[in-house]
Length: 208
Image 1 (cartoon, rainbow, N blue to C red):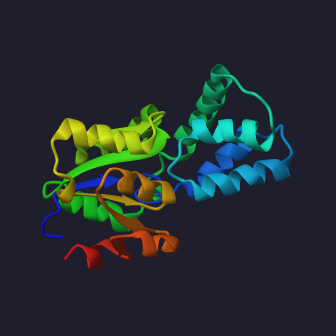
Image 2 (image 1 turned 60 degrees about the vertical axis):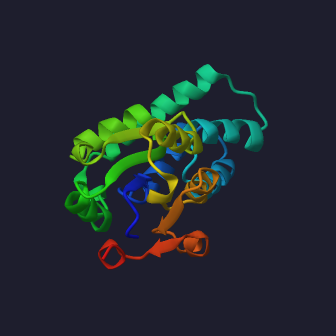
């Protein structure tokens, strides 16, 4: 822990409590389809929290419905999803106080960056509205996959991998950390305890 200088943060489920609202968004943009099929996507989405909506929408059409979908149609649905998120996720009651308080107290002590599966433009909009932008050196999101976001950040920053960790709540966060040779700290998802370098139950108790 003494060597740790840089923390890469997932967003949904780590900084904001948005997972149920994301579920609502997918149900809304896919309301024309059979509910049972949509619930298959919700399960996929919940397990793969770190994947972008672009991948999830395409998965729903290609793998669940066995329907082809164009890039233009995927983008249109993703934009509809984003409109819903911008309305629902700007209320500060969605903030996870445990992590946000740590971020506010320690942003001068570490290099903080966000690497998220959320749409990048939407992510930056939400961070600004929620008063979070000033605490992060950079904010990155989809459609670039998370493992590439981490790789690009490491390549462009000059950070030593041994001094960097990623904090996340999904298996995709763990995989992005593994692929890039950095520590992974699971949070807000007990199924990740066995995959974490250390598991964070509380930021006050963890970073001492």
